[in-house]
Length: 433
Image (cartoon, rainbow, N blue to C red):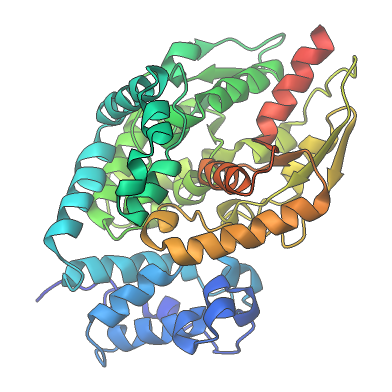
């Protein structure tokens, strides 16, 4: 008999929802459509019907699971503590296993990205180098200025305009495999370079290592790292996510570190649940429990150990607003710590963002597969950002950074979008000048 992700899931997780509806006002898709099936409560009803054998994993079921952002705002609102993140991942895995969404085009795209590109980050770096060449040689500027893109399908035009700028150097070219602590060594930590983070925001990785070193950490950053498997788990590829989790544990044995640091909210939310992912594995499950305890978001870790406040120097005034990445505030319950770090920066005024915990529409690859909903959410986010009159938007996730950068560009705004750790690193450097 075929293994079923929902039927084989601990039934107490499936039946925990009380259908009280307190999640409804927090759900971006339900807010947009007011349709019950587009709400967490409606989706859980569908999942339970599949688990009970009353419903097959149909195309409608699968499409609904992929219409969900996976922002986890419902988990923050839920009084019953429903583990929607676990249900959501198993529901998508069920959808993939059923094959109801299969098509030649979809198989090629998923095969290239999930099964080939992100299973070996050397391949991703090769693609990054090709994109960097395309940008640095002026070919991209020529393509955009020539008007040739106007002859292309609308969706292709949109995707080309979203192409991120690839960094001049990747993390391994900027960061040593071992960075010594500045001053007294108090901790030994591992630094996860990430996938998109390494290509598009390797400067954030450099800043993260520098800030850690300034605060008594010896930082281990191996040059050849693996994808954490977040992308695979969120897109129904459970076995691939398990394989990548084992590789992470092999590369970073948790007993060797005081903390395993991530600066990407989406990765961090997944990285802290390897024990669930590897449950039943006699070798890796015990290691995964220790791994989960050691994984720390950078804001969380710095707040835990206490930071050396930057010297004021001639710090320019900055009006900064903070967008809370969904997988940081809802997935990891980290909300106060990033604000703490921002408020430690001299001459920085933090202006609260209306609906700061509302999704920006990035949501992993959601902005690629559900562009209409993603764009509506981005427009809503940008309007709130404008209302703060801030010059800088800070956020702790590469997907959110890229989404908001593109949103500001589209709206003709000259706002800076930066990771809080970059702002902190700059404050340290200014204090030494």
